[in-house]
Image (cartoon, rainbow, N blue to C red; front, side):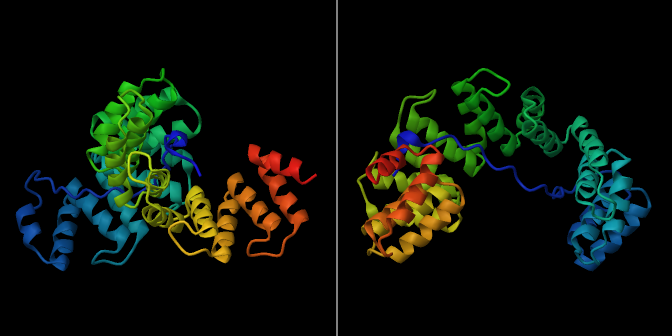
Length: 352
């Protein structure tokens, strides 16, 4: 199993694009009585928004679009949602501009049109919408245009968007578009982590575990990774399992390691599936269960984990839970070897 010395910084999965919802009702103009709106029933709110929207109140137009999009007290109607978003967008509402972009990207109420989607995203971003800036950063990032990604992430991060702060931290850790700078990475990870961003909390923990830009401090690493893991972040849960399995910074505790690996494995984390399989195979923190071990190894293998391929090979070689089969053992070892797993080469040499 991997110890903490092998823990890597998490790239962070790009989040699903979301329709922007402005939960902060702005008191603007006298078209809509927002105090009356806040005290009204849901049906009454719809009527207030319709009256305000028809009179040209951009905030009312935007909020009515949200209701039409999600079907809140009105039927779901993408065409109607786009109509109100467009009217609000033309008055400079950046959340509405962003939402029109999202609708073009998905083809909701309009034919799918990525170019038109990007036009609206850029319009929103250039008017200061931090979520649009973040999204343009993602688009640039996935196309390896790190200079452009850095530009947009930084704009969004400076407005306090935790997702962008975390991505900016990644760029400084990996030297993408900037020189590697752990001090700057820690700054952005910390800002995001303090807002509760689980990815950033985990990566801040990794910085303390590795001593990157900070004095190595396993207790501090555990503190940040536990925060992340308790939010359900599967990579942090795997990290916690490693710490308890290895007894690194904490007393070795197979029961606790089993607990964290299981949480991560149930979310599909490939390494945790393999590590949990090894615990079932050897009876660490649980009863020996070859069937469950094999099931978990196969799940991990399906995600391309060579260590799981190797473990399946071992089960066939030793006849644990399966009929001993050297030919199958060699096949699995070969799969692991082709993915660069060095122990598999030794196994193949042994079985010649």
